[in-house]
Length: 67
Image 1 (cartoon, rainbow, N blue to C red):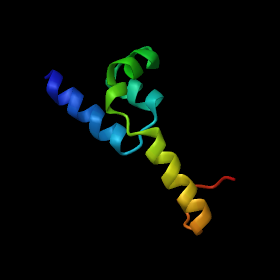
Image 2 (image 1 turned 45 degrees about the horizontal axis):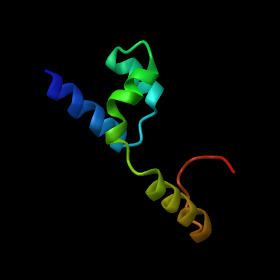
Image 3 (image 1 turned 180 degrees about the vertical axis):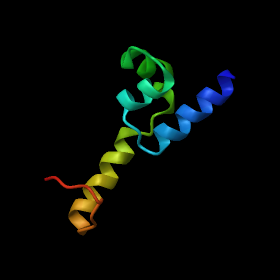
Image 4 (image 1 turned 45 degrees about the vertical axis):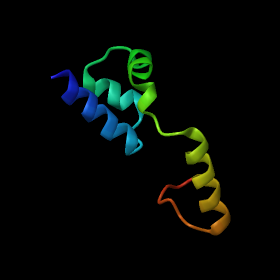
């Protein structure tokens, strides 16, 4: 059962799920616990930052509204 929960969390995190939302879906009362438990599954922030900046400079919309 633990392996299924871990797989579920890893898929959601890879898709960019918000840690607070994932925590609630897993039944954790503290998002900090979820972060400490699954932090090794988070995609590299360096890679995400590079992709985000490429989208800005190359004019690709991420589908989100904001600066």
